[in-house]
Image (cartoon, helix red, strand yellow):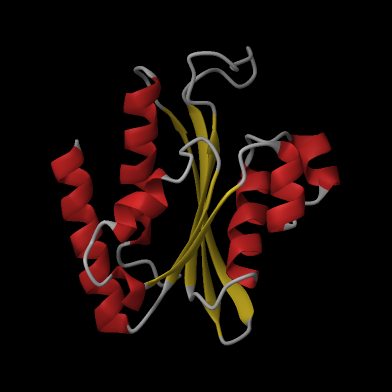
Length: 165
């Protein structure tokens, strides 16, 4: 998996450099792995702006501006929360694109409604000052905690490659 993630990071770097674009990431269940994978590429400061790890509901609200009402109504693992995270990190950065990841990596923490392996992703694109393009996806991932987190990084990077909205 490590070789796959490094390959994706290099592809993302080439894509972003060609477009003169920068990214920002908002992470929960991945705990900074998306940012770490991106910044393992030499020269990543040319295309990686910032990452925020907001692991609990309070941090999502305080650091990313996710409305408490959204978390209360939809939960921390939801499309609405992922979108708010992607918007929050983008609005707090100088990046052009963002990705947000929120889910349950396990082995604990799942519920019947949101079982372990449930992960929401959101990608956002900014043109000028306005965030005008979104894409979201829900994945039901299997395996242990490490596998789920690595798959999240893979999905996040693949979603960013070529994403222009």
